[in-house]
Length: 312
Ligand code: CP
Ligand code: NVA
Image (cartoon, rainbow, N blue to C red; front, side):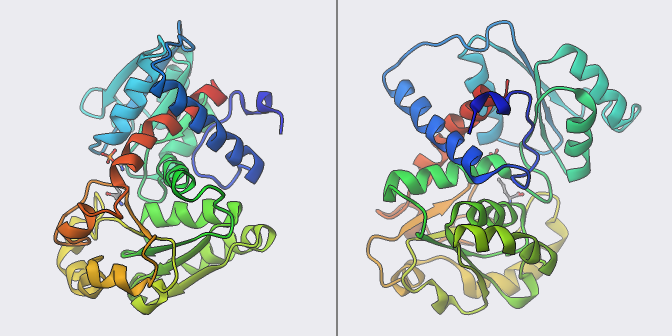
């Protein structure tokens, strides 16, 4: 893989990235983290600008992009939809063309996947999906980095996502795990199984990498897994489903009993955060020994810096 081919690339989801390209980003992420631990100072984004558009709230993603870009000498500009015309008075296409004339790259967090795809098509600069209703690609790179820190080689390791099997995080996990040979079982009530179209779409990647991708409504499916991962029951923008989700997902809370069902004392716990403690995860699990959620949150910054270094 020639890293020069990544210059100018966007990340809207992982579908158009090859396994080798993703592995390169993971390696670069570990290098970035080591360098940060050594307190090395680099100025690799001097003279560069990053537009950061947020339609939805964010702590980790915003802070990761802003600090990663700024500490390398770049100038990040935060733009909430309260401030700019995006889609309101001006079309997404026109906003994309204008921002492309002023910025070296664009980050977008919001509702529609279409918006980030139009920005990527029309701006002429790299565009990063910081979360949409459909995908959360930068998150899952940090997740795999965290798995590597705990297990070394991740090919052939297994992950169980327990919770809302249709959300943006699990959809991105399905793609990246299929491509990199990580076994993934989505454990959720049947009503919240991932869409068949996505399962069909990832199947050839899984066949090529050897990843075993499965769904189950039985929490016994966590037996033997290396990692249990969960996310909020109600994603941003889905607040009207709160009651239904609580009813459906109550039996799927990640608690000590579920961790024990793995029968693997070395199994770790991951959560993209923010967490609703006492709902999708019990306090003792998220605060316990097996929880790696703070490393995972820190790794958002290293992976996001690696993505920008590779593509800008
Ligand atoms: N995990 C994550 O994306 O967190 P934020 O919503 O705080 O950015
Ligand atoms: N699925 C969650 C992820 C938050 C980082 C949401 O979309 O709200």
